[in-house]
Image (cartoon, rainbow, N blue to C red; front, side, top):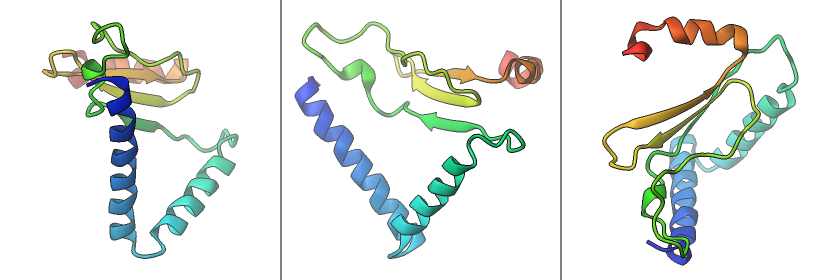
Length: 119
């Protein structure tokens, strides 16, 4: 898949996701969704609220995109300086998931001690 085919695929995927949300939330789903996202964003600077953002990019097919210089041998995300952010990407062979985790330093200890994560 080359870049000119990938962009419309990405756009169509977003449209399908929005449509699915509207079906779940009803005809005013987009309004409900964006009002709540606005409230979350407004509280983003409130240190008394601890949130974790999770983004699953594992189905985007990054390893299938040819930007004109062949398919990538490794795909990753840009450096995102956000705390409490988890991004999931599939591996090149699509036999596993990479998890990019940005946490507060004091919270990282809890993640490192989790037996399921360590295995």
